[in-house]
Amino acid sequence: PGLTMYQLFDGKGENEGGSSTFTYLISCDTSKRAILIDPVLEQVERDSTLINTLGLSLKYCLNTHCHADHVTGSGQLKQIFSECQSCISQASGAKADIYFEPNQKFEWAPGHVLNILATPGHTSGCVCFYDSQLGVFTGDTLMIGGCGRTDFQEGDADQLYDSVYERLFVLPDDTIVYPAHDYKGNTSSTIGVEKTTNPRLSKTKSDFVKIMENLNLSYPGKIDIAVPANMKCGVF
Ligand code: FE
View 1 (cartoon, rainbow, N blue to C red):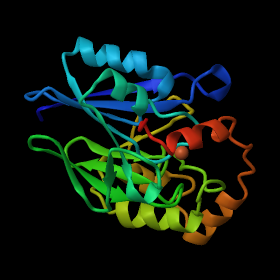
View 2 (view 1 turned 45 degrees about the vertical axis):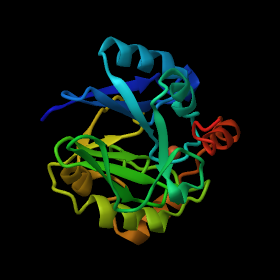
View 3 (view 1 turned 90 degrees about the horizontal axis):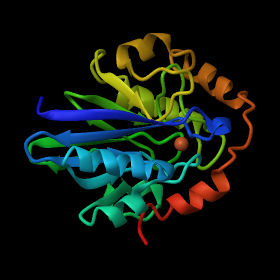
View 4 (view 1 turned 135 degrees about the vertical axis):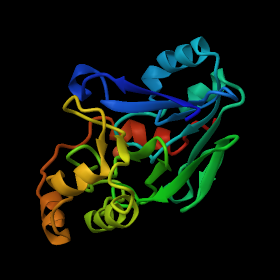
């Protein structure tokens, strides 16, 4: 529908040198304007080469939240593409050029609008980006058969469950779900599939909270570097 999207992937997982992050490059076929959702610092060269090869002009770097597992590429991309502005939610508390408000409609190219869905829970500033034709970019709020952790930053399992049910599971069942990470080789899902099969989120809220309280995950390796860097979100 006048848009082109690339789903890009950073490595295979923390231990193999990548963060397993999906970065999405979306461009408008007529204006050649482009946006990146959740760029990764280590992949700036990959992203900028692709943008230049395709003859696009990068306007915005959008971050779904202040990540704990990798440093955003927003800052370096702003240095390479002088027109580019960094974006993150106001509620994240991070610095950026543009701050998203809940329910905002963000027109990033003529006629192309992303709906900003506030989905606190993994962090209090988490947002998802919804395009009625492409699908929903869910960050770490909803993943394929999973969801983001709620045991650090401002994590709150109760709140994450409500965000998913009130903001995401109300979207049409055939809406494609594009998460910020996958650790098993999956690339996308749908709202309908996650609603019925997600092993955590298809449960009741109290069962979900119990699951999240008992994950016993290790402390994220990069959190002490990534969070302070991402609080600046590409503003130098
Ligand atoms: Fe995260």
